[in-house]
Length: 121
Image (cartoon, rainbow, N blue to C red; front, side, top):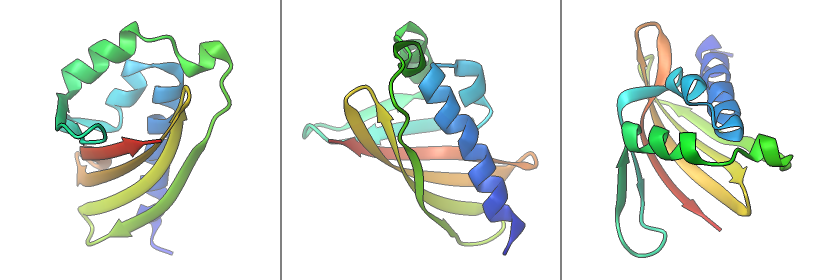
């Protein structure tokens, strides 16, 4: 198997760990600074840049501190070439189960999330 799939899955460890612990520094390892997070789950477009995401995350009680069960799973990795990939995953935060579609790019010798579209139930 192409080692880049392992590299992508490894980068997503920081994604899962960072959200579980509300650890901004860990998330900065996987999010490109220009990334935006998008959702329309409630019928209106939500568009957050990373500074807004990091600020809100730093103010939030972490799932780790509450002892929440972790639900982290990569559902698919679709790589189009050596520099771009699309990942579908699920992550639980509080009482919400999120399904995230992550666009990744390979820059500076690492995989980084450049765009995230999400919904939850």
